[in-house]
Image (cartoon, rainbow, N blue to C red; front, side, top):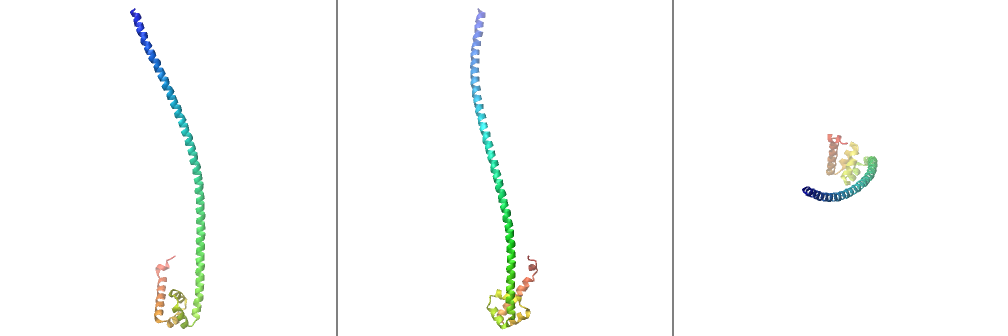
Length: 181
């Protein structure tokens, strides 16, 4: 009987342990199912994230391609503008030179007219002129004609024009001016 009691006791222990073991399996199965559901959810989220990442990268590549095309267009436009700027500067230089030649030709013609005038008449006209314009004419006159005109001018005006002529001669023969481009 003792043996029987021990056997009942041991079987009851196993029964309790068996019940606990069955309960543990149920809990394990529930946790396993929960973890599998979470894992499935994470996999879905990861796939969605990958799809979003791929879409975003494709969009970035498309934008980069558009940006490169725009950059090439801008660079081509800038190059074209630079070429046009060079052409315009060359034209400006050409026309400035042409204007200077016209001005010089006109001034030469005026100077010849003053050289042919009587000194008294030329002196009177030059005295009434803007000094800058008068000096341009006086500078171009031959020395003997210039001296005759200055002789017929008011002494103060003649002195002023002489100083202006001297100043211009000094500036044009200065070493600093000879190196100007």
